[in-house]
Image (cartoon, rainbow, N blue to C red):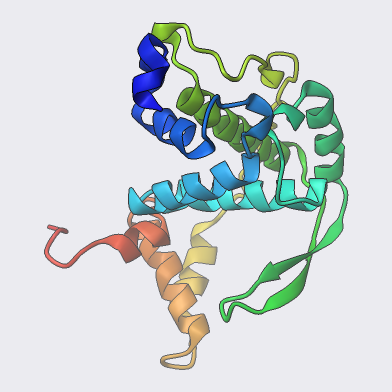
Length: 216
């Protein structure tokens, strides 16, 4: 296939060339699967140690699958009108099935997203769409397999500033000095809260990921 394609083969990058060969010919935009690409992107993020970004992508991919009720979602289905309808869906309370830590399906109830949650979710969806465009298109060679860009017409919901709750010295003293069962989860939660405060708001996940010998 490579030898018979002539100079045209030069328009493909390594990854898209592999797909070209697997498909037996031209890559058609309507055959590019959004959900499948999203799952593969999650694996790439996990391998790169970007667990937070991977979790965000898992949320987006699962939600898209819930909304469109299909594992096969062509990238051509992601249009500005679809994004507006999807936004309305995300604002509504809903019950969805997810796998728990034992890989068993359980029903979970979700509240509708407020402005900030909606902004972050649609931002992550835009990141996924941009990743697909970067994967299949090559601006240097003028290759545009994906020609549409729905986020040009769709505008993200503006973030709203959250009012930070006030905390007083007396509250911290009460939390620090309260008597709790030794070894209990509530004692652990209190200690982690105080540790985060002493470290100027360091996240628990960052503490968890510190390797022995790296902290001085």
